[in-house]
Length: 397
Image (cartoon, rainbow, N blue to C red; front, side, top):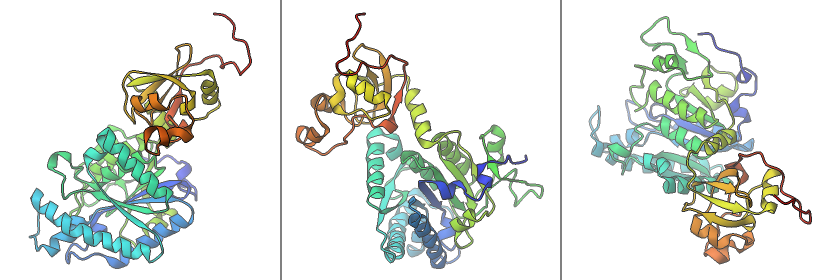
């Protein structure tokens, strides 16, 4: 298949223009397969790449494999597949060494490093998802560089990702990243396994993940990591649905991110929309909102002007909803005018509605969000006549 020329062909790739970037590093890149030692020189080059992105004003999150591969040598575990409990033990030993390496290299450049260990449940259960997202948002706002790995020490087979490709995609989705880079031991997607098929052709851009594209990933895998091309395609489905560009690129050469920016061969998966637009499409498509809030005419004018919904403009609640649920926004006349993700439960909303945002901490006992629904989490649904401005007479129905 011949690649279609797109905006990524130009000198400014999504990696250079993204506001928020997730970079995933595989085990085979970090740990020498024969010795089990960390590839220190390679990691130092990667850190230089990450620092360059940050100096450009871009926010970076690193999803790192390698804990099990690094820890198994210290526990003298035999080569080959490990039992779950052996993997968990190896992860416990290797994770602390991996975290120390990142801390040492990044803090030498006065960059604060944060470690997060996640499981599949953390991205699928609403409360855990919201807590993880809030933590990441706070760390990025405070200038830290989060390093994420799967929490292999406690995850059972039923709640594991099993690979960090899909974990990275979930993280990109969670924080509305613009770009996800999967650094691997292969430079991109081929029409067949290039190690087995001499006629395998490289695929430069993927605009739609068709069954044909998925079939290309069959049978390709790294000998050292837990992921293969199939997991990368699964990650791409998650990323592009969230409005995020995704790149599969060779990570083994030094300075892999700089090489991508310079035009090194890689495969780009292209989203049809931006992260914010994709998020709003998902909100608008919610079949059954958990509850509703009723707003006054002043709040309706604010929403029409593209602003967030503040507690002061809310006059009532309907139904039972929790923080992070999608709710309907009803006008004073009972028309559903918008949908959005609520920052507060129905009980807390009832306590702060009609009040100033500055009063939230006193009313609830904690410092919450200023907005009940932030404009990035809000979709205007219905066409309606603008609410009358203050002092204007409303015509009788």
